[in-house]
Length: 195
Image (tube, rainbow, N blue to C red):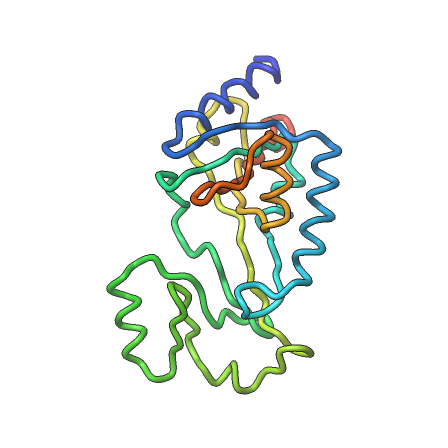
């Protein structure tokens, strides 16, 4: 199978995901612009909690082919955690999708729940210096088994971009920033690159 055919099959697979709108294959120039936007975003305070480390986007940027696509409220996010809070290399919190678990975390005095983010030990917040020793907000790469099933495809990875990259990709697609519309990136390698 030719690479163009593989790319077309992956495109169809993405289009068939519930909640997906527009799709764009990113160019090498897009890749470099997004890399720079993500570097800048990593230095900004995320969610008021700490600096960013978008490991998902960093990993996708290394793939052979990268798609950007818009999503609406019907899009099903990959299974969590999608946000991991780290301090000195240790996980100190994460996002939790299960409402019952969130309620359980709220009952424990050592936990802090902010929306759907749980910090497991509030002592971490008291001990850290936000400027010199901040939390690191990690956005991990997520697998995409639907795309990995396409013949000759491997390492299919989803990533949630930072707001500046989100805006850039929407602009590239000629779209306005509409409430409830987001973007995701999906990268993959050709099977031959996995050997």
